[in-house]
Length: 102
Image 1 (cartoon, rainbow, N blue to C red):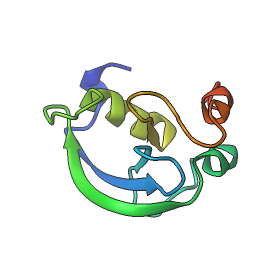
Image 2: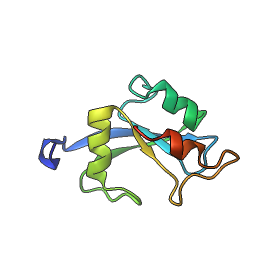
Image 3: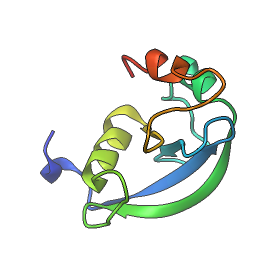
Image 4: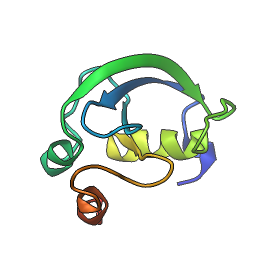
């Protein structure tokens, strides 16, 4: 899929993981977790709504290209933003190992 096939803009709803610092789940529709695999929800833990914004290909994001996030929202129904320096918790490495395949 090319950037040309992406919509001009789309709503984006961002949820913060309460368990994993700096991990965020982006959704194209508020509170619609239907496309997020249950196993992924269990790994990232409880989430809470953080904020919403309109995403377009010209918008600058800190860690990802906006077109990459839009493509994932469109194709998969979600986008997972990982912490910048990898995952750290009491179960260090568990999430990274289990995210293989998502």
